[in-house]
Image (cartoon, rainbow, N blue to C red):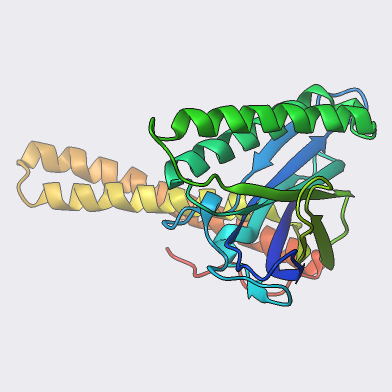
Length: 297
């Protein structure tokens, strides 16, 4: 069984700002997936950024002039983060982290460098402190290390004579799930500015989508069997082309090879039909509707 988990940031709402100046917000989201096979096994930890896009997801401006009371939709390439787990991992932890920035004059290269350092810092921090993530002091230490790494990466990526206004990190928040159930669950993620800075408040609306494919092994068997048919048929086609220009002695050899390949082809067709029946049986047992895809022979 294959389980797919997807967090989707759908909308950014600005609920309050300290002044009437329009903001240019962008997000740094990251989804950390922790798959644990058993109590004594080492976990598999993965950090997932949003879907790639030619516009650059790490600094994609959600609005050029956002004010208190405004809302803006978050495109999927900047807000959808997906992860798949096999059923060999009975315990699945998901941690969604989102940092909100206000854009000023940072070039895209500096934003990208900072975001890459952010992803690396999150992965390393969680991996090194997996058993202590419920300790606020540990979490604060991880956040400080990430901030230091991001600041350093951005500084190194800025032009030598950069004199513009730096982008401002507004705030950060996170959500976590343990073994989320199949289905769709909406969530709200509030992001507040740091207490020492100007008061700003945002809310991100989104949802967690979890789906399960109970027949991945059977589907893979159908694909393998169909691939074998394609390969045998391709070999037969090559022999048919060679036949046209072959000598009498070579034609005898081609006939022998073609007879063997046709026998192999019949066996492969029987194999693919067997695999398709197994897939259909699995889908019926799992309550999955739909066909097995177009058949070829």
